[in-house]
Image (tube, rainbow, N blue to C red; front, top):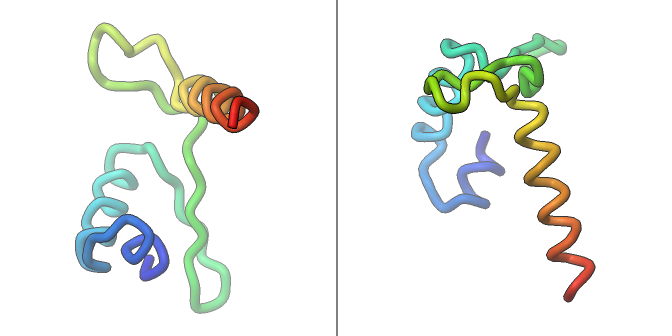
Amino acid sequence: MRDVADAVGITERAVQHIVRELLDQGYLRKEKVGRRNRYFVAQDAHFRHDLESAVTLGAFLELVAQGADRQNSRA
């Protein structure tokens, strides 16, 4: 979480709060590995708003990744 906080420019405590909310809402899953936690995106989770509720988080992330790939290939 420290690495994420540094990369985004927010406090580690803020990252912890955001991650806890994402876990509570079902967008992330947590797995204990020794003394550490691993977090996984819940690819099958659906957005909550009525207009986007048919879209899964996995499908959305694929779309974002494709856009990033296209952007990088232009550079």
